Image (cartoon, rainbow, N blue to C red; front, top):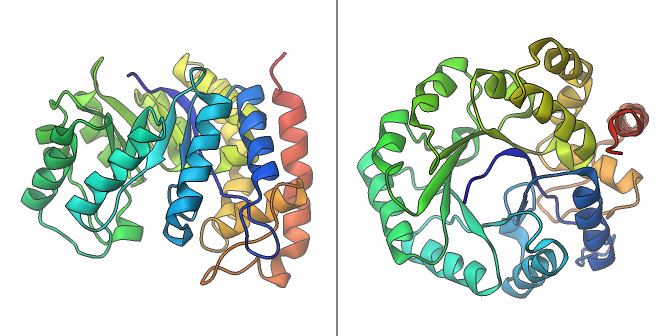
Length: 298
């Protein structure tokens, strides 16, 4: 498997009563496919994975495979705070038809670098699915260092990394690890264009939930080396990036999705966007619609 381009970390649509909104989920999946998204992540942190029951996880992933399977890769979020549980969840995702597993560093427990190597090797050795490493220290309290990634990148079943640290030095340290068997993907929307222009393979994005065609265009420009055009489009998106960080993810992106008719709720302890940001959300809705109209694929 070779992952590249614009990949969306999907939000999970809920009804106002807090139930899965499967009609909205199918519409979100189809919208991503129609816009040219090159892969999706189901039940990652943006998908409120920690709030999902096992049966709901199964339903979301099974439906995504039914809608998208064979056309674009479907990655399943399987990372948990314990290695054995992560292996079990990765096997579950494999049985449901996922193409790969996105495995975040174990949240909260803060293992050593040696512990991270042992953790990921155990998951990969189980051979259930190809594994994409995921480093997001701001959420997990654990930083997967480049030298540790280098130890893991040669494993036949470890096929890439989603790196959410935004310092250019971190991406520069990871880029030499790229190969035909190991992809380096940005996990930070505001610096994704810079990372791809520097040589990263693509982005696993939150923003592409609401601007999928625009992010496909941004990725194509950056991967094609058109720095001026990529940077110009990226600059236009800065206000959206700022809005998506105004409250914890996925609160802001779900506020826009709700205005697009795709789900209305979140699950506690997440709450809906604060009323003080409602006017800004309406402005962002207009911007999103403008971006997508301008960048829709013919």
